[in-house]
Image (tube, rainbow, N blue to C red; front, side, top):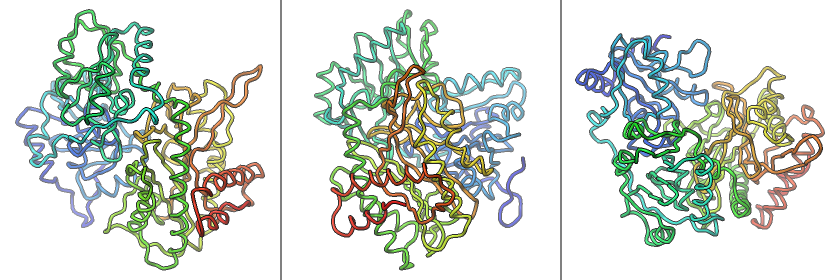
Length: 603
């Protein structure tokens, strides 16, 4: 693969940042330096301190890995970001590697070719997981390559690097959580006994926030805080800076017997583990530096963390409170939709002021705690960029034609929302109408699926894509992801994706339903609801589950080609709109109610 030429047609040149990095690499005898997207907790979204990959490369997507050698640079990212990365890397020396595509080497395979015999590969050991480094070691073993991970070169060249965040940590009240910290710890300890583990290391921030019934704001849009946790049958230790924990949170922790230690004391604690310790960790989320700090005598039990599985299944309190959350969010969406449809003809709207107005409608709720991710507002060709982020320079003005895609969400103490709607702005092409209708058919295919106990997400993904595959169309991202509860908008372990994951969908899990069609430089369509996995029927064959919509907001029926839809699909949409109308009418008044009635009338 060759580098992309810059707009002037000349050869791309190295930036000063990459030159500085190469200078530091030479000083330490490093042939290749890896910069992942993650932080020390394998977070998808990170605090500015860990945005080194974006700082070095200019690519701002949430997923990607940059590798720099003395004469080359390459960046791997997934299908959600192919278009965005192509645009942001254009003119640079960095080669875009479209991860998972045919003939595109993996990062480890590429390094095997580029690093010389007995060479050195370096990275920040805090931000590379144990499992990733193991894979890297295996690939590089034939060349006797050494790894250097004890010094972060970014600290040498990033002179104004942001400090680690230090925001307040506060209580997530039991009236929202549904279970106390003590109850959750009892469940965790029971699983430790079953797995014959004497200690549990938790590194993922949302697991920690869930277990301790605490929340923070160290990462934008994600109500989490930097911390580690160690759990044993006799001891609970939370590693975070005590000075930022609110008084009522300190009281709650003390009542549950939680010991507090400084955030950076985790390495010393791990290094002092007893010889007979059987430590449960998830190698995919445990930093290599942490793993190397443990005595060789510690027995590692490697598996998914029990907190991850427990957190994924929402309890009855969480489910009931989420219904309130989605009604409030749905009402805000209806007020926004009416405003949007009324103002498109004015010619005064663009992608930025639309985002600002949507934020205003949501923020009118006293329960609003911020957005759950930066809104994606993409008109026309910008809608084809899955994770597009508008600014004043790039924002398209909205015209009275074509399609507008808006993917947004909010945080409330009783839930996290994530909703995508695509709107007709006026006159549409036949292709736009057809694409919109096909995406609606795919959305309904998943929404109406009945599936057997034990079903994995990959099976539902194929069901969802059938209406598109019949037309020779596909989309280059997963169909759905788990959703947190006043936590991260992307939550595992469940997902609906073409990638195999050995996680069965279970009642109480949340998943999104968001198929799409994206035509580069033309338009994008995506329609998304959060759905709850629930029991359906049980008979002599098996137990079967269904999906119940949690998201409450109308779909734009203007672009639909009714002739392409079956009676079953039309009936589902009519029933959904009836449910939306009944749930949201008490939350609205005046013209908003009248608009809702019109928007949800039966096809």
